[in-house]
Image (tube, rainbow, N blue to C red):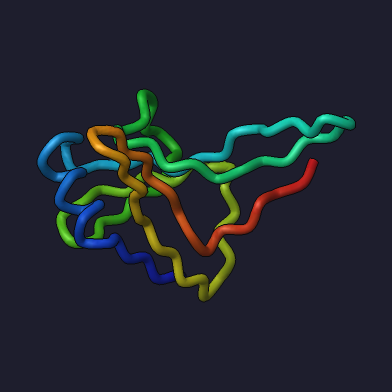
Length: 100
């Protein structure tokens, strides 16, 4: 099992504007000289297809993990948010990137 927390400012915005749900999945990033790395991303929404996704709840926010995402046993995960004026981007700390 693992522990997950959400920063107060991120939790408040998720509840107010995004239906109190986040999806955590990986997305490929490509290097300039070849190769890929899968980077974990946080999207403020529920997954379109929920079958097979692991679902957790933290302080009233539903958290959906991609079924292909490997979360290490005993990990301490933290969801936060960067904000600039009206723009915001959610992030997750505690997951390592996965090389392909």
